[in-house]
Image (tube, rainbow, N blue to C red; front, side):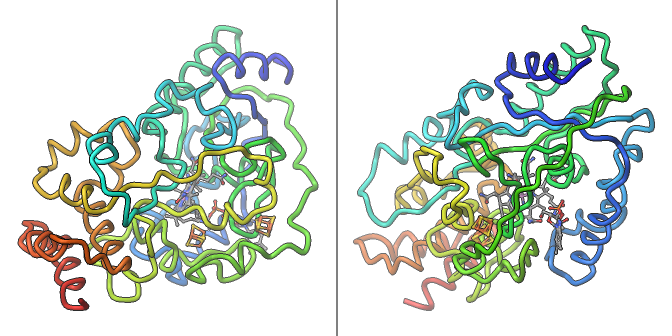
Amino acid sequence: MNRDRLVTIAERHGLELVGITGAEPLDDDRRRMEASVTAGRMGRMEWMGGDRPRVATDPVALDPAARSVIVVAAPYAGGDRAAWDPTPGALAAALAPVLGAAPEQPVGRIARYAVGGDYHATLRSRLLALADDLRAEGVGTGEVAYVDDRPLAERALAARAGIGWIGKNTNLLTHSRAGSWVFLGAILSSEDLPADEPIRTTCGSCTRCLVGCPTGALVGPRTIDARRCISYLTIEHPGTLDAWESAAIGDWIFGCDVCQEVCPVNADADDAGPLLVPLIPLVEWLLPMGSRAFGRALGATALTRAGRHRLLRNAIAALGNAGADAPGVDALLRRAAGDPRAEVRGQAEQVLAAR
Ligand code: B12
Ligand code: SF4
Ligand code: SF4
């Protein structure tokens, strides 16, 4: 199959950015991943260690029949998310009881990537449908499409497939209108497809993300210390956040977009910004909710990655950072300090103690 045909088929699924690379291992990326884990920069993400760097950087380790990797980038902001996500407003719809109820201040921010339907499920089903179409045209594809939840070095493969380049903020940046506001996914193919060339663009002398990261998590160009990254702290970090971590998240309650907001590559992305959520109604809404009720309310969104307890923990920390003194806040925090979950209790006690 030639490239034009692949692009035409991918466009049917709303996927305009496609690249092809060979299945050869990414030895340099493997070494960098191992170094990052060994140095502790991946924090408590134990799943990033072990055999993952080897497997993630060797498509053949995932599928012995792999000869090529088809990589796609799907815009989640600043471009047409609706082209591939049938529920681009899923998060606002799920949070309607909170967004509708509210006094306006203080608010927490939810990163742009989480605003639609859970991208793992949505993009994976798009990739599976694309793989079916490719098979129908005689292209051998592996059984599995990968989006984030399988061990595959998606950014490094996307860069090698010429979709973009890895910026100093460690994200894959593209020349499309969406810039770096893209998800990445991949399909392994047993065909020797014509590989694309990596593009030559670099960040040049720009350092806006390194300077702009509010927590110093970008410890060098293309090197992140996840332990300082708000995205890690709000989504992956287990347990109560300590005093530094709580202060570090500021008003972000799920993910962080700052190193992409400051990036000139995203200047043409006409996006709606992060989702702003009033914190007091959010805490009131989440507190009486059990895990099942949380699943029913938010199960179709990416917020399930943090779950009820971390989201509540983050909202309480952000409430503390805002110095909220509206009537009823102390009573709300005292209720949270009696929550069955230790991370919620601990966070509420910490905020109460600092008031
Ligand atoms: C673990 C993880 C995280 C961790 C660690 C992030 C990180 N930078 O490694 C945390 C929780 C912090 C995180 C945060 C976010 N993530 Co994340 N994350 C992942 C995951 C699951 C693995 C990434 C990984 O292996 N990291 C380890 C590093 C060492 O490996 P690497 O990224 O593959 O390769 C790096 C090095 O090789 C280095 N590099 C390359 N060449 C060179 C050369 C030199 C000289 C040097 C020094 C380094 C270097 O740069 C590469 C890119 O970081 C991927 C999905 C996947 N399967 O790949 C998503 C993924 C990277 N995340 C994604 C997103 C959207 C985010 C957030 C934007 C979400 C948010 N808004 O909060 C933030 C961005 C924060 C940031 N600046 O990276 C997207 C990125 C899309 C894109 N355009 O790049 C991915 C690809 C998920 C997806 N399927 O779309 N994430
Ligand atoms: S996501 Fe936020 S905290 Fe993490 S590196 Fe980027 S700006 Fe820094
Ligand atoms: S802000 Fe500048 S240095 Fe950072 S990723 Fe964007 S272009 Fe590269």
